[in-house]
Length: 125
Image 1 (tube, rainbow, N blue to C red):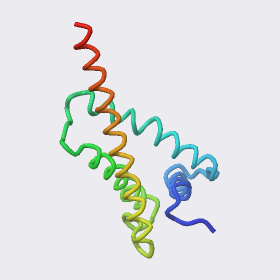
Image 2: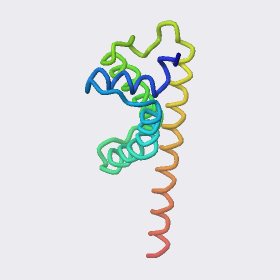
Image 3: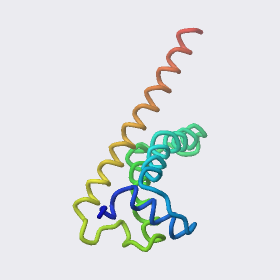
């Protein structure tokens, strides 16, 4: 039996609850990978690139949001406990740390690319 904290299991429960659809574990894992590698950085780029949102700890906050939204709201929608803490508090904490670290790496990469792009522009002038 799979762990309810596995991203595939959470996605499968969410799809079953909202769309009354059964997706395979392979499809759910693929969806998680697409969201994490394409949609997540794209959303980050759009939000920060717009100039609307620039807190000093944006990577930490972005990673926290990436944890709270799926593990909080989506877990409730799929009839799981909020943040899935229940009997899995330690594993839930590890997932939080992973998402925050990913947000920090994404933030640092984004800002490094912007800085290098800006410095290239200055040298060409």
